[in-house]
Image 1 (cartoon, helix red, strand yellow):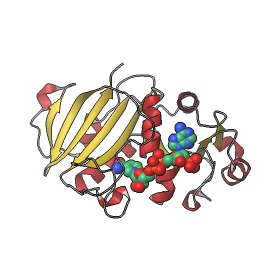
Image 2 (cartoon, helix red, strand yellow; image 1 turned 30 degrees about the horizontal axis):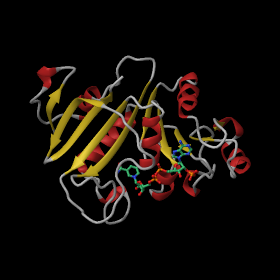
Image 3 (cartoon, rainbow, N blue to C red; image 1 turned 60 degrees about the horizontal axis):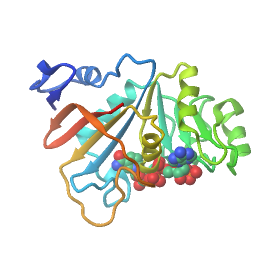
Length: 232
Ligand SMILES: NC(=O)c1ccc[n+]([C@@H]2O[C@H](COP(=O)([O-])OP(=O)(O)OC[C@H]3O[C@@H](n4cnc5c(N)ncnc54)[C@H](OP(=O)(O)O)[C@@H]3O)[C@@H](O)[C@H]2O)c1
């Protein structure tokens, strides 16, 4: 993996054979009070899923490597309920916050250590009572009436000392994080593959207009991995 462009440290452009330690530095979050980034992958023709209808069919080694590094430098992982269910999310070494209107906790996220899995949901959630008994009432955040107030979610997590917020999509959650102005950064990987057909893009839902600035661009065997900061 090599650095093509690094706006923070232009001299690092051209660095080759980037180690995991260097990657952690390249992806370090700015010294803000808190930072929320989202990591997504797509094909060159804009598909967010491949043959399996899951993103695992378009992930590659370079993307998985950065995915792992981003998790390792996060305080908490945030994921939409659609992705958690489709991709079979289980507990990880970072606490997970599941975002769901319905308040349903997927099977594999049940039975974890208290606090390893949290749920952000809303008052109208059908699964609220069950989720509270599965995860513990303290780990279920009721933030909003019919949708999760993502600004309030960020504030809530930061108040718990979780400052480096790392979201892994999916497309509906990314769209909502952008439209609510909560996302600071998008890490987007473009894998050198065309899949055609009908597939979701990395955002889904109503239109959103967000401008971003490229901060970092890496390349690994024709895969492009970038950090874009949301323009404020
Ligand atoms: N290419 C990539 O980088 C990437 C990344 C992640 C996922 N994916 C793929 O995307 C697909 C899943 O797409 P998706 O759009 O369904 O994923 P998603 O955004 O993870 O899930 C949508 C669900 O998340 C909850 N949600 C999202 N925003 C919310 C909000 N503001 N308030 C409350 N709940 C909210 C709702 O859950 P409830 O229905 O429970 O209320 C909603 O139905 C899978 O195929 C997955 O493999 C691709």
